[in-house]
Amino acid sequence: MIYIQRSIFPKPPLLLCLPQQRLLVIILLRPSPLSTPSRTPLIPLANLINKIIILIEKLQKLKKMGMHSQDTAELIFEDCRVPRRNLLGEEGKGFRYLMENLQQERLVVCIGSVVIAEKMLDVTLEYARSREAFGQSISGFQHNSFKLVELATEIEIGRTFLESLIEDHIQGRDITRRVSMGKWWLAEMANRVAYHCLQIHGGYGYMEEYLICRLYRDVRPQTIVGGSTEIMKRILARMMKL
Image (cartoon, rainbow, N blue to C red):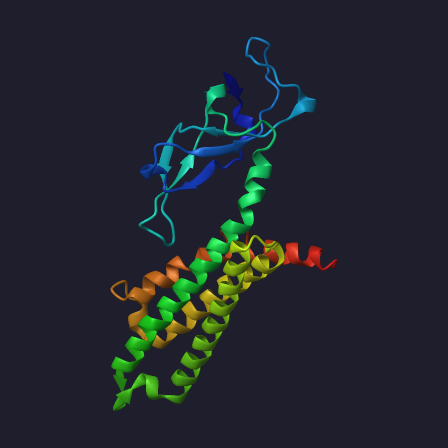
């Protein structure tokens, strides 16, 4: 057994999505030296290693701004012992395993940003064509029509870039630089689309019965998950030797 000290886990506790729908959770951790020799095996301070283990200790469902259909909970660890048989892969390679799939994770976020932006535009076009004010549909007002054209153009550009990223990834090419660009730009684009689409809905867009209200809330974390916009720009700045 490997003794896991509470101090090695971040505070506040880890946040995990969909925990109450899962039986197993994969945790990346770095064990610290044991305080007493009675606990075995001992791990020397100079030999800190990464391990991926499967464990659930305690779950507490949290309330979020959006994505209400997706559970999010805390993982709290108290005096945990992790069986060696729960180790995934080789000792010391946990972080490497994460890095190998990090660009694919960001690509998935890119896909989500484009898809939700397209959905928001679709529901807004449908609403604008059917909603009438001053004797005509609101889609006929120049400001609204120009804004919808602008949103459609941005989404089309984003879709083209996304498909290029997917093709490169399938071909096994290194997409680190371009997917970092796509991650921040597409997520920010989706949030711009959300703002303007809700604005076109007017007061009805603020009502839960309208889909745009939910999409407006659900799109917000796209600029945060998988590496925030600021992290993506920092990565790109380093690649550009800035």
